[in-house]
Structure formats: C-alpha cells, structure tokens
Image 1: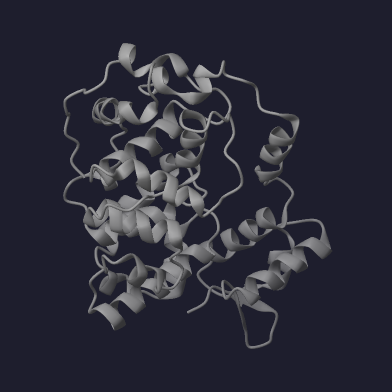
Image 2: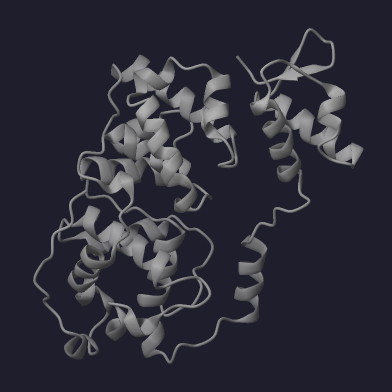
Length: 311
C-alpha cells in the first residue's frame, strides 16, 4: 500500500476545540513519514502475501514475522504453491513463530482458495470469513489492505487508540462488536485503508499500552484522554489488563513448543524416550503431547511409541 501525504486541514491549535476526528489527516501524514518499512506494505505485495502476513502476525511481534514472511513468499508465492506443500514442510517452515496450529489452518485456507476461488484470494469480507482459519479481523484486514475496501479494521492497537483519543479511557474495554461501527464512522471520507493502517501504527509505536508518548502523537491536541487530564486507569481496568497478558514460561504451550522443536529437527520418527527428555514433569509433558496429537500437529506411527510431524 503506497502512502501519500495530504493537506493538513486542522492544526493542533484549532483542533483543541474539537476532537481527534479532525486530526485524521495529520495522523495519515504522520504515518507516511514514520510508518515502519514492513515488507508486506510494499505496493507489489499480493493479496496472498497480505493474508499470510496477517495470519503470521497474530500474537507474534512483527520483527519475528518479517524474515519468516519473506522466506514463505519466496517458497510459496501463491495459494496454489502452498496448497501443494506437505503438512510436515509447512510446520518445519513455521519454525518458532508460535501457535503452530495457525500454520495448518493457513494451509487449509490455501486449499479452500484453490478449490472455491480458482486460486484467487477473494476480496469480499463474507467470502474471506468463509475460509478456514479466517476470523473477523483477518477478513477485514485482507479486504482493506489488499483490495482497498473501505471497511473498519479493529485490532488491539486500534481499540486502544480509539479508547484514548475518542472515549477518554486509558485502557480499551473488552472486545465489542460496536467498536467496528465506532471506528467505521471515522472512515466516512473513504480513506479506510490509509486511516486504519495509521491507527494501528500509532498504537504500536506511540500510543502504546503502558507508556504512551503523548508529546509526539499527531492526535494529541484532540485526544479525549489528554484533554480529560490523562486520568490513570482504575484498579478494575488494571486487573483486567493483567489478566489478558499471557505468561509463557512453564506453561503447556512452552512444553508443546519444545516437543514440536524436536520433531521439526528430526529426519525420522522420534522415539518416545527422546521426547521425554524435553520436560521433567511427566503429567504436563504427557498432556502437551496428547494435545498436539489431538490438534493434528503430531502423528504417532505404527503404534510403536514413535512420533513425527503429520504428512
């Protein structure tokens, strides 16, 4: 998506008497100057490339995603290429991005695109939603960023920016469908793709969860939270925020990752005793292995206590 600077219709001085909506042109100009140079933002990126980037970026920092995305698009530049890959190759290529079930759902998605849409990623939100593994956010993001459809795209960053700049709350409330309509009202000028990516970037770089940099924010003069005196979040809001932060060390997810790492690096089925070495707690290790089997991420071969990636 190409960024274009645009006239600034409201200065910080006059915007103070209005709200953050009047500063959206400044926000888009800010993004044109400060937006990160992520590979999937290049104008030549295909809809398939955008879709892959959105799936990979779920709950994963973009710094880890970028090199992996480049490798994937070089290896599997189209849905047809990816649909023809083996599940084992897909999981090995996924590496340590985390939540490997996403990789298999993306593989299923590619197969559906080939079967239902002749290998062409659809642009309609409802058709995207009908694909395996594609939720409301991803469907809207692909429609917006790949095809320029003027639909609201609301992720954690957008929710936080909207909560502060328009609702005057430090922390965003729990996800709600009404936020789609609220953010949609900001797109009346038809600049949905430009506005949405700028809101996301602002939340990622400036209006961050813990330490917002209000002095350099392009929405500062019209921000409802700043104009209210930048009130601290309530104890209940902070408690909800802490509850949403997922720990990793010592969890079943960590154990699953260790088992998957062993299987990715193996060239032959791995005997159970080798898997037992990855984690000292027997009950937790067995639970993690059973869950991987149930998710289709691991396969037991010949009932002989040997395990491998799915074919």
